[in-house]
Length: 416
Image (cartoon, rainbow, N blue to C red; front, side, top):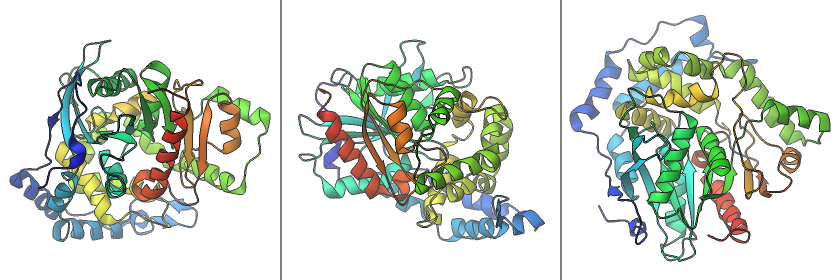
């Protein structure tokens, strides 16, 4: 396989990234379809044969899971995905968090620029996603730019305890948002971006990390989000201000309210009984596919649906890396009480802030709310007509345009 021209590390960096190649051993690879074949999928019931109703959904349908299982065994090509992922520079690197001396072995993909004024940006995923959410975006960047013209360094990690990013003491110490955010900041410092600084971008769990990093670390110079949860005080202030909303914004907020009423139970299961759901899901690939596949379908803008191949690749990645149980720390942090709201998170109100609003998002920030809450630092806002929770995965061209424009604005306000 040809070496990517985007893999040249910045000179003189303090860290020691080691090139990484994705390759699941053949015996492990062949065991997954064997497990899928050996499972008797549940007998028909009213709920799994009437999964989608005019008023909502009961969850994964028997028909979808049966069809997906057949495709997984007979048509899915993991090696093709590996080859694609390996076309990008991938690395592993060791970092240690200064506050508590936790040792992390972090995986990340990267596209390094050779421009002297390139702005570093870290793109952070969530659950049930992984760094794979950004693969279509990386494809577009490689098509559009060369290392000599790329205006930013793109760093796409497996966030801590997800995918290929692990900790030495993961069996004895529970991860929290502070530790995970500090690990991401240390990653950027290890790549030489601590002095000039970097931009943090995120959605889902990545939103929590990016928001925290923007508030707590001087190295983080700006933040861009495509999801946000408001705290009780912010919500009350917005309600009191009676801010205007467009019909499109009203529709997106209605999606969020429906998710909060009938679609968020999984989060409280993750947050309050992580051992149980992890053991159940990790017992069988089909159990994991049923649990995670529901989210990929329901959280997408299904006017432009995710392919089954994309969903199978995402779930296979969780299965092969064994990360499902490790990854639930984020729900322990964000949804520790059943029926409670998302835990309040710190976020900057001084550094440049940008937001991309996609219509099928679970929790969003209408323009009038953004102006109200971030009067001194909102420098970029854009609403899109198509896209959902997996914005970079579903609408990579729109997502890339937002990143390009946000970076351009930030460069006029911050010296990197």
